[in-house]
Length: 275
Image (cartoon, rainbow, N blue to C red; front, top):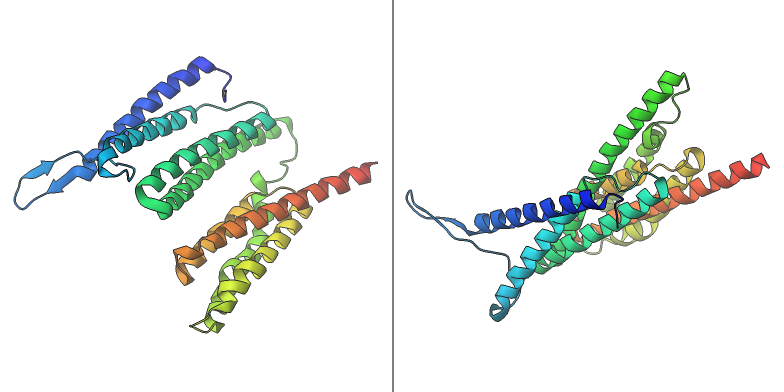
């Protein structure tokens, strides 16, 4: 169970299921809204069929309704705190996100194909990150207020955003400036520099090393990998096409991996010095 208060979680699940069913009905209404010439408007309900063939369209509609109800339940319980302690909070959050990602990817993939599933996952991840960043800001403000009352030093910035600012200049040049330059130098028929060397060599090495340096100096800084991914997405839409969206994944994973390794090295060096 993701929550300690099971009764409250069950109530939120019930409300979420009802909300998911209502949203599915609204979606079916919007899909079936057909305007004709003149003032009359004919309205029919067209439910998503999950691409099931005609003899089994009813099963596809039922599956679509069940997935929306499941997604509503998952959103309903997300309004509750997962846990009070750090390890349990991270573990339960990861499980909850994985369940939501599976639900969104399945529904969007069945109805809109691979590109639809990818778009749904990107949208879900973006909303999830924004919500949790909002929660972190609230927690950080509470901790800062307590430290101020106790007369203690303010400590490091939230998620080390201030410490990450100098590295954003490097990320801007690596994730956006460098591919622009390589795109200009590339031949039009075979873009080897921007299509091969940059995403598979320069981008992973650059994001990993910069994340490693940031982690070794200031500790875990999750905003930097996110910034690298967002800059890569901007480069994809400005210079490439949707098939190059994997650039953002490479930038995110490599910067996050480097930052994690740097953080571990920082902790190891600190323990070594204290012995």
